[in-house]
Image (cartoon, rainbow, N blue to C red; front, side, top):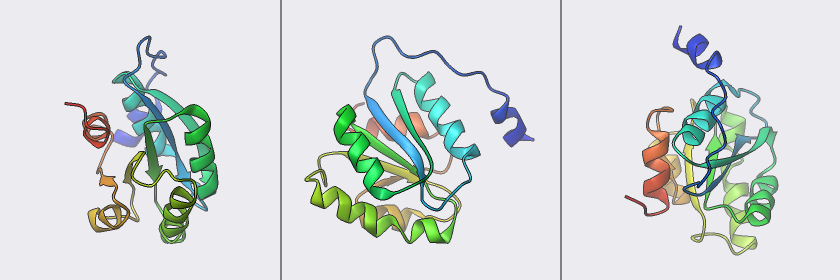
Length: 142
């Protein structure tokens, strides 16, 4: 029933003085956005400006949107193995754009583990409750 409760949560207001900007989405071909939406709302409630790129998003879109919005953080939801298989493409796109190591990454989802995040230099989170502190840690805030 917790998934139903999270779906019924109200949209939090935009933060007046955001901690930072996070680009959030499901990497392609993942279409499962319930968890991503819960994390997005959790980050927004905690004071982050969230830019939702949607579900089944190409790796390059994350990079382009992060550059366009001067984002501090990319948050990726990975709920299928085919989506997990696209993480190296995201890593390559970040390197090609000169953002590797300059923008923080957090990820979570049914198809990834901490080891997958470690491989990309990202932080791994298990749920929406962890997301705000994980995001702060990712960009070096206390």
